[in-house]
Image 1 (cartoon, rainbow, N blue to C red):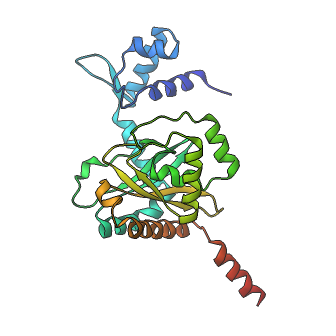
Image 2 (cartoon, rainbow, N blue to C red; image 1 turned 30 degrees about the horizontal axis):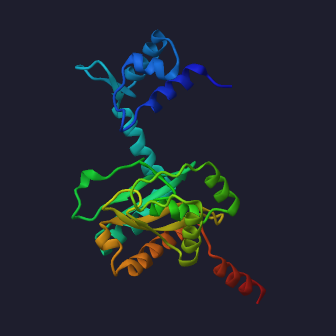
Image 3 (cartoon, rainbow, N blue to C red; image 1 turned 30 degrees about the vertical axis):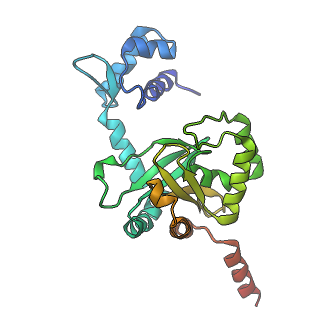
Length: 264
């Protein structure tokens, strides 16, 4: 059973975004197709409890600090964050690059952990940002190790968009890229999503053997795409492997060794 008032309140919160941080009652009512009085009652309730706050100048509403507080709590409670934070810190100290951990959410990747080297401003870290799968290192690392059926389902609904001149926009080219990622164990973002930004990603597996997250080294193309690409790839794959084991993943060759030991 769906409680309509709760559903509508959540729908109001989902209307806010980086592109649309402030909304008025009329805009909210129009977006949800509800009466202004209904929208106003819901918004006032959300504002009273801290989930929204009103700008005294424009009288429009924006997300309240309660949302941020809950996001921080969730980020700290996520198992993938708890298991990856130490390896991620060691990796960023070793490479002096940003280390990013992301999890799959429908057909996107959501960043749950950013670790910055000391040369980076602390406040630039971002959580909860969605990224496309087909043109980011972390996204391609998540996508490549899905089952063939899941990949086909993703491609069937994918509407390719050229974020930069380097973005892959053909199905066959993406399939070839995913095949190469599976062979070498890591993905590369060659300024495909944002110009002047490149990355190397690797999959993180869970106890069932499925990909549950990805790790990525993010930085300037000169650092990522230069002569250090393979050595950087080895470091991020090592960090991802350590996190996978912490998540309960046992590689097939270790399973076979264990089986042989039991039989022997």
